[in-house]
Image (cartoon, rainbow, N blue to C red; front, side, top):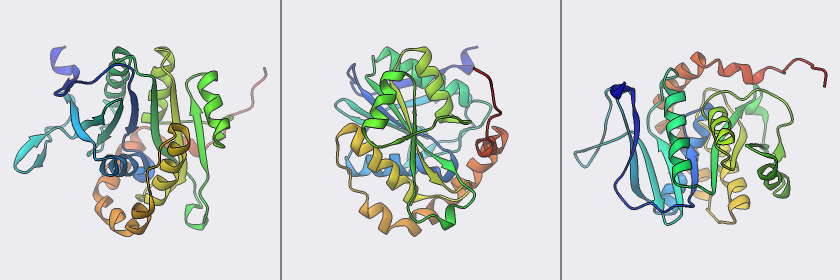
Amino acid sequence: MLSEEVKIIEHKSIPEGIRIICGLPDVGLVGVIAAAHIISKLNLEEVAYIETDLLPPIIMLENGLPKSPIRIYGDGGLMVLSSEIAIPSNIINSIVKSIVEWAWRKKANEVLTLGGLPVPNRHEIEKLRIFGAASDENTLKKLTENEIEVIQRGFLVGPQALILKYCAEKNISAIALLAETFYNYPDPEASSVVIQALNRIMKINIDVSELIEKGEEVRLAMRDMMRRTQTELAKMRKTQEYDVPGFYIR
């Protein structure tokens, strides 16, 4: 049905062969916080947005003008996708599938999705670990080459899982970077760890010192979004990431 379409509307020219960083709401809001920091530090401009009747009737107001809550920022060959609302669990498949379709049409060189892995003892951990997964064997090598621990076996639930799945189906090189994080508290420290891993993979240098210094301010600003995201994560059975898959015979 037309009303259920998800469209990506470009209002600036976007070349082919782009690299796309995705920061969608998930545990600890790791990807959302990281994406916002990257957009700010690289001074990226809005180049596209998602339009769909599937979302609740919400707009963002900036200087009195309406904006989509899910937008793409970019400069040259680098794009950053970010959402300023919790995406309802019943439409996340449609949203992510449309994003990957758009990436495929743009002949994207790489998609990198940023997020977290919930750990029950997060408050006791001083040095957060970073983990990764990829859409194919060749892309997986980038993780080991950059000292990122590969998730050998486990469950992944939510937007990162869908991005890897749909990118694999479209033969798009994709990486998920996931830092240890809280399940239900905004975690700018985890976001900084993810950005540092991204720096190594993309050979860039995004400074994270300000993000760490303003950690408490970020946590307070993100409280409401985290609460709404937590509700949607529960519907996705996100807590299954704590589980260990059963043994199987090869």
